[in-house]
Length: 181
Image (cartoon, rainbow, N blue to C red; front, side, top):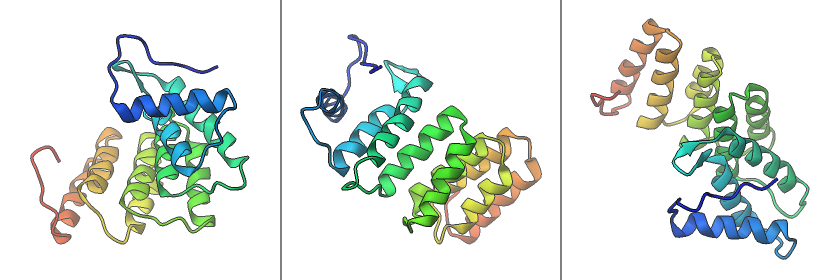
């Protein structure tokens, strides 16, 4: 079942293009390339529809990724995995998040800020702080979003002592701490 946006929704041009691509592919009139797949996954993976969060869209992103894998000419990249792992986080789907992490390792997909932060986020959301910290720690370089994902995970799950140690690492990494951190 394909979910389309509600009429009162006012999306940007890129979002509408993603929805058009989805419709054309579902009708069988277009063969998607990696950019098209990533656009469609992003449209679904955000989990946001008409100003409200909708986890069925994240589930649709996971199903769409399975469809993508059936095409031998298209290989997922960092963008694909970020969207996939984000969808897992929206759903609290730990097993799929772990599978995606293994996929990153198995196929040597670059562990950049974005992939590492989304892995940290999904593990944190699912309550696996040790795995979140491991993903965080494996990053060769971190930015403010990486630190915020880790601080948020510790904070949500009541690991206050660990939560307070992360800002010290931020200072050693010359990351500016803001009041919202």
